[in-house]
Length: 145
Image (cartoon, rainbow, N blue to C red; front, side):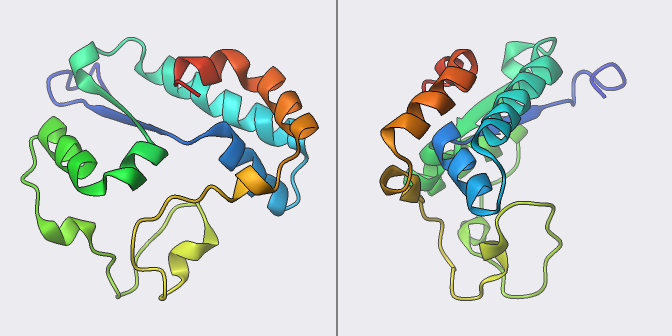
């Protein structure tokens, strides 16, 4: 894509805390090691896909930053894309939407706001956290986790 239109190509890379991702996948039946390797692969793929782009064409964000400051992060995304920000961007539409992957809660009509989920903090034990960290360490460090 970049080779076809380098001046217009932009990449937004959104990362989420590996512990939250692994815990979410484990809740759905995936094994700890497999879930951790999946997170690590995703981060490596994101890096590989964006490493050749000019720095000013790549925006790296974390899910946690977005949840903690949705307005300022969305304004940052809009500025990056040269798109005008509108308050309506922070609202969850009530009509049917097309979704690609992600949490099943996106279909819950009661969940109307952006909220940080840190349930993993009380669900993963020290041994599990240590094992996950062993698997993802280098990639996690690059994102500040």
